[in-house]
Amino acid sequence: MKFPLTRALAATALGLALASSALAQGKPPIKLVHTAPLSGQLASVGKLQAIAVDIAVEDINKSGGINGSMIEIVRHDDQLRPDQGVLRVREAHQSGALAVLGPLSSTQWETAVATINQLKIPAINMNSNKPGILGRPYGTRLNTPDDVALPEGFAEFVKLFPNAKRVVVMADVREAAGKAAEAEWARLAKARGLEVVGTLEFTSGQTDFSPIAIKLKELKPDFVLAAILSGDAGKLARELQIQGVTTPILCNQLIYPGVFPQTVGKTIGDQAKQWYTMGSATNNYSTGDAVRYKSFVDRYIAAIAKDSVLNQFQPPNVANASLGYDAVLLVAEAARKQGIDGSTPILAARDKLRDGINAVTTFRGVNEIALSDKGDGAMRNGVLQVDPAAGVWKFVQAK
Image (cartoon, rainbow, N blue to C red; front, side, top):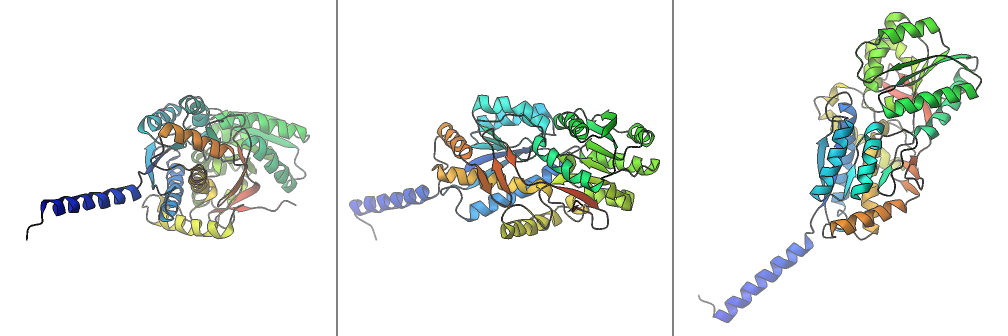
């Protein structure tokens, strides 16, 4: 049967209208770039953070996305190199991304902040802890900087060793947060009336830690105040066991994320108890919403079980990987309130997101984070100790 021409045109028009309506309902996605070390010394930290980011994206997209636009994650391996971190920020800007999640380390963040603000692209850092890195107006970091975390942790730690008199400061001077912590540790020790009997410096990625272990044995401190990445700490832990050095070691947050507690317990056994750090969460506790955190941890652990590399390190160590989840939530909530979706012109969208994030003073996700006007986060921190038998960080109770 043939339709008259007018009826055929009408049918065509109706079809086009329906197709147009369907397209209007399917808004363009919102692109976020996640840059992290996925190879090299801190590959485990980057991969664990990626899992947390992906869980958050899944949750947001299942709930309707950001004002109807789904989040699309583009992920880059920046190898923990400052130049690669800056390059990824530039690529994110050119590709039309709404925001950058990362880069990860203090050295990378400090190097990238000027570019972030020059290009006017919002960026959220989840790990940097060196004090004084001013990220605003476009940069925000969620992790507690050491000028807040170190005094809190030190005050609790010295209660565990009330008779201590001699301390050694030890720091990775290649990493920005390590060099800054060296000075802060010395200041805190001297203010407490402790004698700093030695300062030991090294560089990240160093292969031979026997000179450090031998020197510690000679100096005989009551405890050590350190700034060291987890991979280097694992090598040093083995050398300390060989030299018979069991001195307690309090580290800044460089050692907190990743797979240190699982691996050190296996390599040196019960002596792993000498290692302490500061943090705000374990697998069983966070400062934020307890129900949401448990759901996140369960799914995080399940995702690790599917990864043939990460699954070798058991049990999983959540640590501050959960800040990857909160970073996505912060972007999504600020964007929703600012009326941003995938069709918002990108320059306007970035400025709206900047304003939305800068207006937040307290963010409550799976962690509760206070945000200063400088763009620094802060969470309640406590002292954690390696539990060798369980292979996890556990909070210690100061006496």
